[in-house]
Image (cartoon, rainbow, N blue to C red; front, side, top):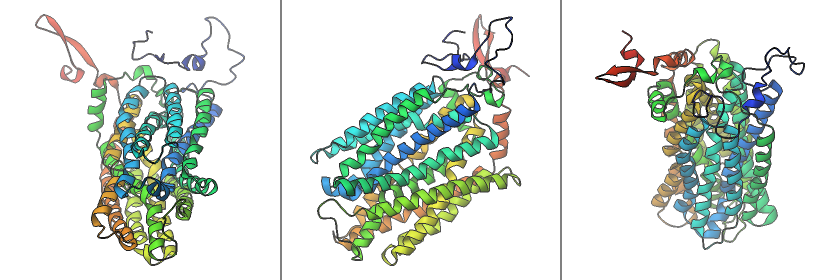
Length: 507
């Protein structure tokens, strides 16, 4: 096959396919090196496990880096002398870069070697992250620029990694591996707060907190190159890639927009992104301001600031994330025995239960720190139930050759309407509500603006309930997808040929 043939397993970038196929000469007997039949994916079961472990490690690093900044936010505000609005921009510029580049990497990921794309992206991410730790106090805009460029590396990874897992496993095993993969989100997020706060304390300088993940990122690139192997797209689902012809990007987008389960679950996930993005950046700062307002901690006049709240919030995020992802996957597995609508129903339940606990956590901040931490723990646990399930929904309602594009579309929409703007929006609302620059209003204005998250969570639950109405039909349609229904054929028209859909001539 030629490189231009869209059905070819050969890719324009460096490929592992030759390694996977192991073809033998005609007439030769069975190879003594192959005692068992090769898996359809072209990747052995042992190497598949190691691949998931490496992908989880990188996912953990991504989220660890993302929230290290939030863990030392009071120090950054004091160092650069910025207000809440500018603080929110640190997360917003990163998410915007990540969001707008996701479709580019989604397009590439559906067509070219995914391992090479991820390796280049993670290498770039490591270098830019390290550069962001050397910004002098007069150049806050340079810190914003480097944080924006960090999104390039994360977009190259987050859109592609789940599709590799989907090509290695199916059904319950896929759900289990996705759960392991998405454990890295809350665990990495929590470690970002923990590592950021502890490195800041030990070094007495917040800049060192941003220099931990780049070194680990270079290790991740080596592991990607030498451990991860590119699986054959869709082969493990008894639909080898050459039987699923790729359509144009516009055709892919039209098909995704006509998929109600995908669209509605994406809007539901947007609510999750809005809430987690807001809490991720602002929760430690909010808890610190509550402690200053009640007199439990001194204000941060000169760095390093007290980062104990970031440490506690990080520990809560790790534990609640593990419990949330594990319980969400297990409840969904058990509920599937009773109804095929289990996945969106569990997602809806998680969001609807998280809303009241987050509300209580925000309201009780000034009265009882202990109660606040308990309510945050419960709210984050229920919120984390969504991560692995939403990814699984996308993978089984979308055909293999459109999955990276679907991941990219979901990233764009959920971040555009979710955590791309929510940290900045919360900061702006907080600044607008602040009547004076007293410790009371620094706390109270942020408290009132954070209450927005509880209402967004309820709206997200409603979208997942709507997803349950369509999930069975869309899953069956993806499982029974036949490309011949959509592929155009050539029909003569007025002395020349034109391409029309098969359905228009088969009457």
